[in-house]
Image (cartoon, rainbow, N blue to C red; front, side, top):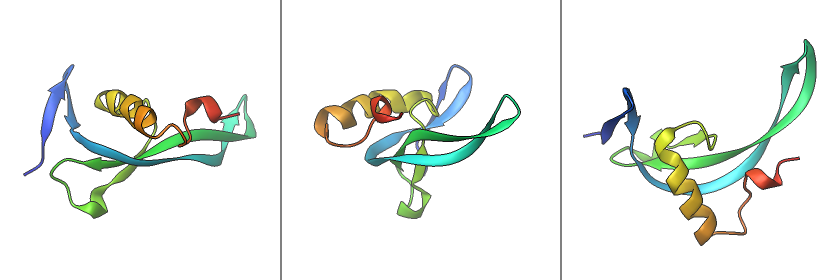
Length: 86
């Protein structure tokens, strides 16, 4: 059974824990031009989901992830976070 609840009219999966973080690089369009970009992503383990359903999420990607992001960085300050993206 999946643990899902309603936040401001949207269904959200419940976070079990954040496993790790990483900074990803990609090319995005800015002003009609390709520009190299970097963003932090968190590898999220979802409650009541199989391990192969874990996903990489941006910190702002899910409303109920923010509290877990803050806890993750308190417990693992050595892991990369939004302040480290140039």
